[in-house]
Length: 412
Image 1: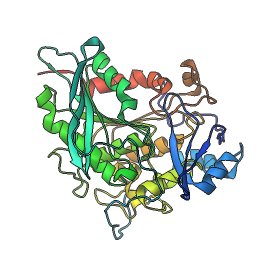
Image 2: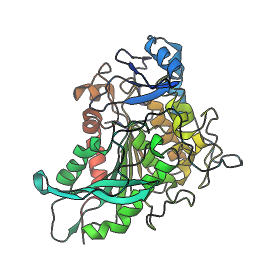
Image 3: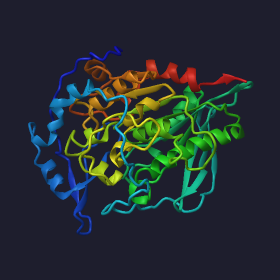
Image 4: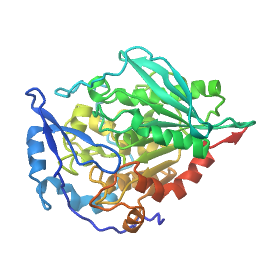
């Protein structure tokens, strides 16, 4: 596939809410609705009632999607090299109001570990205890490739999506990919859980949860006869967290204390929101969740790179693009083209790639063409978001060799 910043696409403004459904939320001003299912991944959002009403009434040329016309310009928008000095915000997480509690809740103490053998000789260790943080037992499922004499696999930490608030989107959504990595690629996969915003995981706590998993992976790799090469990959909100962990995981105020090494050898982000102040302008669906997640209005734009220090506002500090200059490991950004992905605009990947390139980082931007998407059975009407079958297959020829080189099996 062509990896070209001049990649041309048909820009289509759309705001399809035909299957949006309001859900009563105990009289709260904040209500939840379910957006149209895209690919195999369910997408849930939380928004103010006025926004939900606007979304339901949205037509093809609705003003709520005002950011659509600016997406080509956004892709070339330069982020200044350095952010202006400012007074850092209070780094404590702010509990969002009005979000429904998750049921079932994450466990408060470690669950029993279950070990099973899957097809192709893959060993699954389910409910591996990572740490207890904020009264929640953070657990993961570890997929181990078949044992090969004299060979140690590397490991890829997997971070699920769900808009930072979706109780229905847990680590099980990435279970098939974890098994695929171990069986077909010989790469161990640590499929992790983290706290959602309403579980004490508002920014920056869920970033710390993911960094904790990376630290745990380094500390315990040899316990499972794995090589100490740790990469990270995420989908949608999980892609955002994967990027954040790779970019600011070594920052003193982010360190969760789960190990001494938070470095990653590779980051893969499938449909990551990278510039949250711009993201909230992209559609009415995206407008409400980042402010709830960050505790910030997200009205101040990213003005430069924070260079290893906290940025000026919560929303900016929670934006990977504000930390692009700190990248030390290769980054892969995967994004379905507009208008396939109705949740994350293509410009979010393109502006991040531009910022990484300007910082001298090793970045690979993968945006399949319309014809490539259609060749794998996807259409703009059906949509495609994050790690679905179309983007996975359309980018495998680039991503698979990269994973094999960096975190694949290696002789002892």
